[in-house]
Image (cartoon, rainbow, N blue to C red; front, side, top):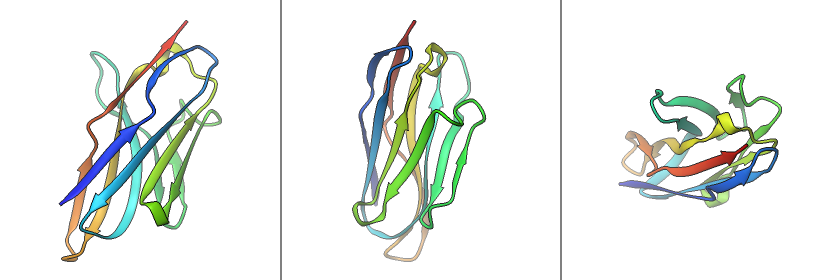
Length: 120
């Protein structure tokens, strides 16, 4: 079993910053990659950013230059630093991870989601 626990969401004014955290725990042998997705009301869930255990990153065009994803391998934790936030960044942000368990099985896990609201 693998659990993802997110924190750091909230309400911020446009132009402000927030930092999201997501900690993985459970029967983890190796974290292959972690990432953040978001879902705004009435819209499909979309990729925000991903990072591999080797540090390779990928960003949605809409957040490039404003958001930074990082990972602390020792803590099994991924972070999303969000700067220059815009009202259109308002969404529920979900942490995602692909993990190899201690039984050497691949597992994809999702966090419960954390609300980010950016006011104009």
